[in-house]
Length: 179
Image 1 (cartoon, rainbow, N blue to C red):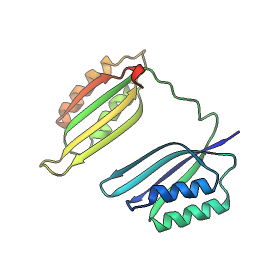
Image 2 (tube, helix red, strand yellow):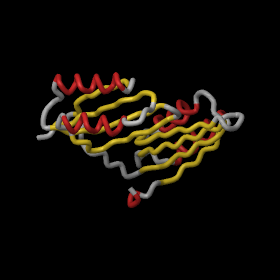
Image 3 (cartoon, helix red, strand yellow):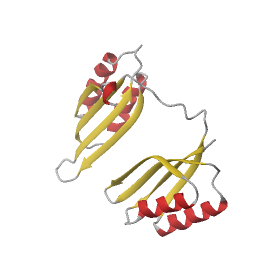
Image 4 (cartoon, rainbow, N blue to C red):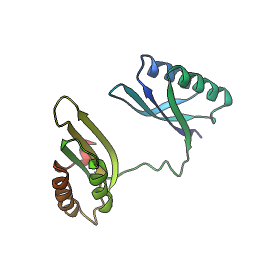
């Protein structure tokens, strides 16, 4: 049975990160099952869900350390158990879009409302632009909401939180057939 691992890494962006990391993983018997990589300003972050027939060896860890030093990145790898691996199958998903002037507390306030109403955040992305004054800010939250609490209460609570922060918010159901 394959063992599964989560690898995370991040640092300042440099050419060759993805290619060389993929080669280190392949050489050491890892398969990249799922991944997400993103450049934010001049930093680059990697999240990879890996599988392997064996646990990482000392040799692999040494190669990973050399790679991370070369690319000036920080990294971590941890095993994910079969119990942890139960496929998430939320079917009551919503996309919450927030936009306005950038200020402290937007992520905390908006995710706090989702949490209060029992939502599970399955994706979150923020973008800010310094090209305009005040800086523009956009946040996109994908959340699975429990059917028993419904989304109406969350929508009603998001509105005053957004008004207090001076941002706009919209909530749209994501059709499960689109996933």
